[in-house]
Length: 328
Image 1 (cartoon, helix red, strand yellow):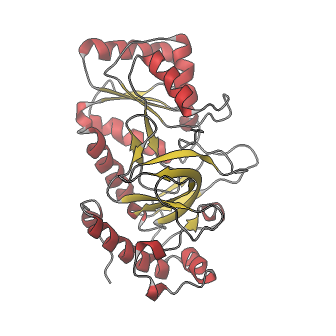
Image 2 (tube, rainbow, N blue to C red):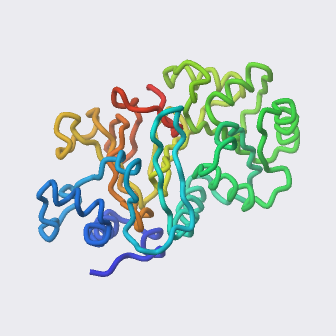
């Protein structure tokens, strides 16, 4: 069984194509990813007998903290690391072919938002810029570059400059994306209010210990009022993945065609739950072909019949990570 290439993965347009790619990648990773192979063996799963998506085991995300989760012997081009508080163990994602990540987020952005060249991309991501190894910063750097717009760029704590840039964008009627860490967006609107209905505000989650956590509805109401927008967009991604889902409002996320969310029973991790039931979020990320495409996260959520999903919090005693993990 051959392994899908990038063109096949990023052109998936049907459930059948997705499922076929899933099974091919599973067989490849079950053979070539030592950590995943040992995990499957421990569950006594017969790899040759796996013939449907619902039979595939999901690797607990914690393995990225203690193992090199790789399905290839090629050297890593990039190493993405998770954020963490002092004394916590962080995750490392070794990426041997960065073009899979680039193609994933570029294609997903185009799918949800259109041509990046139509946008001015403004980024308010202080905590991410202050450390190395952020997959989010890698993506935003690329989007800023791809926008080919001299007004695109980062704003660390210079809120006054950001305010004037937003006013400039509004006056020029230019499509604008403001992507920011949650506490940074809140800090900004405490000092500067703007009424910019056409602005796309995308929060990436995470208070990073800077502020108290709050429910999504409360947070989004505050941000909507502060920026004068009707909805707050969100990105659901993490260090261990190479794909992101997006919410265009109301905290409901949609995956690109090469990514899927499955909900597992928190009391029986091997069992899955029907739409509308709350459980642990499992992610299939076919862009993660050189690592592991089947990840059991520490997030809680539920799916809907159209394939969209909500993130409802985290498992107890899980360390907070900066990837849209607000209590909803």
